[in-house]
Image (cartoon, rainbow over all chains, first blue to last red; front, side, top):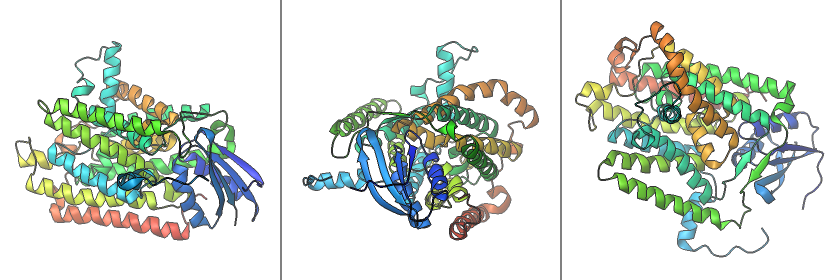
Length: 78
Length: 404
């Protein structure tokens, strides 16, 4: 299981568009190759995030569902 | 994830087709468009703000506030029930896909929800319509006012998005803090959500059946509303997203999904109006003027602008708010509350002043075929949709207008 990351972004409880806005901002402030951990609860992220990554060239390294309806993603900045 | 999934069976697989993954937005758009045509053929097109206003008036009447009386009870109001069914249909869709959970956001988000909902109510009452009545239904209904309302919406969305970005940069703590999630289930567990979903479906069908003797139109509105809610939740059909995302991340899928719905609706509505298809309007002229509201162009522009601001701050348009309520997003519960409370108040205290300047008379009802014929009106709407399509695709490629 992937566990290494450089920064974490808590989007729990937030609904559209806040998770994607915060994610875009966080990734912008990171260096190439660094990994962001994103935690969220909005089901919208499940379809928004892959599309966004495809468009921006960033990469989802890992995704999992935690207890309490929380999704966890590890996203690598490319 | 590690345990081997058991074979779901033929109907289990069919169920999975609908509820294991989100649908593409364009699928949702097209099906919603078809159901909207059906609503019009049965009675009148889809609308949302009128139904939410009906809830508000009933609430005030129940508590005897401001002497509001004579309101149609929700269970006799076609649009009050349609809106209620949107919430319940989304609740059902979320349960079937085990996506239902009460998601309590940080406090600042709830404040934004309420303010956004209040602004939507102001926009809808001043501009006579919302993203459904004066956009998703209004534009295909060949209403000149709806096109102006849409321009207002764009302006409002762009301004409010700038605000959201500013807020996130300057006051990131406003949208951060303690959050809670209740009743969520893990994948592979929580069958209670699916069982509850079936219970909801059975109850709604029972209610629809109870109406069928005296009020068959309501029976159809209930069933169509239920599926509209479910489809919106599954495809995450959201008009704010369609307007906003090209200016935010540059993403265009939400926009093209709405365009697909508009195109389908346009064909159906034009035919209904042209041939006067329909049930209880005594003249062809009345059928033609359905959903042509007296708001051309001042009211539509101001109302659209305010509504656009509100829906962007709230993170849900009229329908996007309703289905997110059903999915358990507490921010949107506050948006709905703001809408419900402010809508009747605006009608009492603000709209009369607006009526002085822009009276609700025939003069302000612009039915496009009156000026450029049916073919011209149809072509104009198609051209506008294509122009929007070109813009979002070009912008997606170049990133010219995206914030990130």
